[in-house]
Length: 100
Image (cartoon, rainbow, N blue to C red; front, top):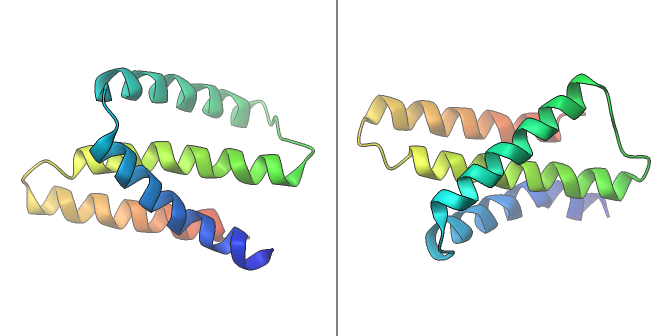
């Protein structure tokens, strides 16, 4: 089970890249993702957490997929410094999500 949980952020990277490339209605998805991320931030500020560990893991991977889809969108900007910052930010987010 630990190996599956450890591999989930890397699976999230693949899922977010595929959804960014192939699922239509990108603008509507991004607006809904922004709303979900706002709800997540409010829940974090209010210290709301799941009792079930599996539900918490699923929710964290969902949030990681949303953030990564934003990152793929930002990588379309043709500035190399911006791209390096996005890659470093995404890498640190994936590492931080596994830091316990």
